[in-house]
Length: 275
Image (tube, rainbow, N blue to C red; front, side):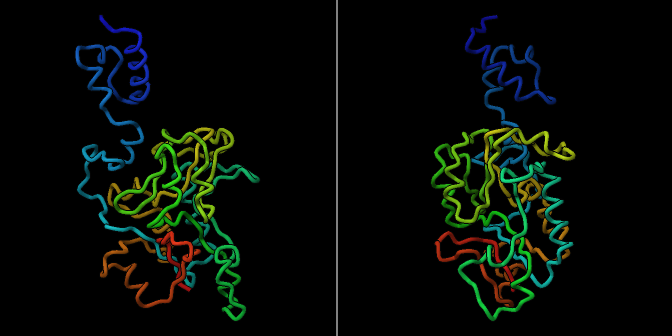
């Protein structure tokens, strides 16, 4: 058939990538089919269709559009039950493994005020706020140091500001973890799949040796839906366009006093806490 060893190995890789519902290996052997197959999107691009210049895959008119996405967390509304619901929804729908101990994987979690805002300690602050458990996640900074230090561009920033992870490019160097001043990234020291309580089949699982984190539910924004945490929080977490002066998020920031994590570092975090 004229397929040499190098092309055969390429074909095997492409066939594996297209395993679910893609073209068969025999179909790919047709003249010109192999080159076309190599131009097909990766499984990652199929799930996150607008990443890294991939503008033609799975266009969706319902896609939420924003110039700069951000999150407001209203600590007056965030009850322990709402925080737990947000974490459980995120963990389930993103197949976050439940690994005990120091190797645990976190996308969003809770932490006490003193740990979240160590540089803003106020001895006269409202005890209700000081004793509260704050929801913590990736801050999707405007100036993300994690993106600058990644040698393979596995972590990158979209035009709308969301900081993403491409698991297929991650080599496990953990430079991004060292660069993040918020501890918002986790590394898979072991195969995470055995630690998934119940696998959600519409989202890819990860493998040993890669970093993962919150993505602001980019896969939901692509189909016109809000992040899971915002959807289940009962109004305690508001997601929106920071650059839109008429958005609910901007209205809250205009009317209420907000704080951000370590703003003095110059990262310009886009998660705001109303206190």
